[in-house]
Length: 475
Image (cartoon, rainbow, N blue to C red; front, side, top):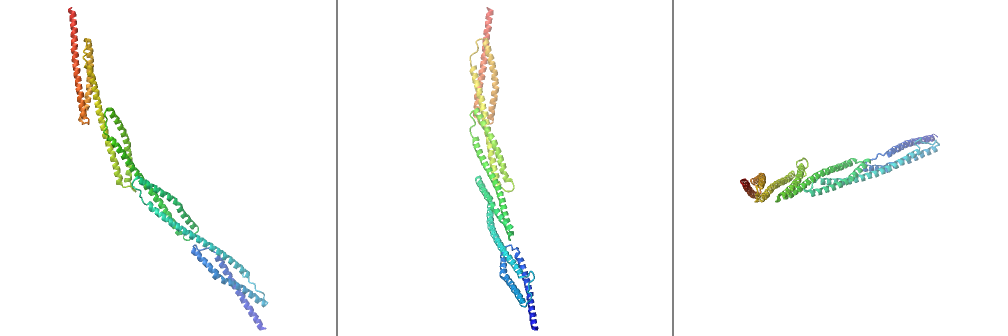
């Protein structure tokens, strides 16, 4: 009997140990499940593709290495509980029921939660893996496009850094068209630069792990873009300066061509063949002088504008010496033109003076010949009355003759002044003076001769009257 009791007691003590073991194992398993669920529910993933792949590998290790023994423990717990309960039934003991929370059903519910957390963890990891793969693809796309943008921007910077504008107006105008084409291409390229910004912004919004490098490269591209804009603007300004200067050079050439045409006209040997023609030539010359005054203002404006490019600080579109040489040549041409104009005007004035002199001598000659014809008349009257009338007319003629003599002397004095000044018409001037002087002397002799004849006729007719009076008295 004692043995039997001892055996029952041993059996009961062994069962009690098994119950304690179950409780400990159940607690350990539930603790592990709870801790594992907490870990599995964490969504703090590594912020890189490699990191997520490592986490996925760790998850796979959990499922294949860490979890199976725990699943085995769970099965063993069920077997242990079944064994405990069977032994207690065999000893007619009250069947053991685990405390609330450690029941097999509790463990199974906890395990189901573990399975759910595991499933959600796997989905989350795979989604994160897909997201990271997409980010890596986006980053590779960014790098590929960034490399293209950097190459394009660098090449265009080198292109616009060259000032091969040419040395004449057509070349500079062609360079301007090329520059405008570059500006158009650059403006169209802005969308591609913005696309780089958009990709970088998307990567930043998605918290890409290498965003610092991405942003640094994006900022570098933006700096290259801004620098290219500055280069383009500066090149356009230089190009505009070159274009303005070449237009000024073109204006200089046009002015010189115009002055050359004027010089040909000013070198004309036509100075007029009579007074009216000379006055017409002088009028035309005054019109040319008006045109030259306008041209002089243009020359002054062009010269001042061109010298600004030679004297200013900063960028110079041309060698200052070339600019100054061209300005000096233009001004020299203008001075030559003005000298020729002054020379021709002086020659025309001399011509006018000459022809006016000839015209006045011609007028005097015509008057002398007219008076010669009138006062060569042999009409000395028929009686004392008629002779007195003729004498009064002759007296008026003598007064007119003295008046003309004064004017004629002034005209001859003008001619002599031209001779003294070595006027180009000296031979003809001297000849005409001698001719008119001779005619004048003849007219004076004729006047004196007629005056004497009129006096003699008066004496004769007075004698006749006196004789007739005497005859009448004697009778």
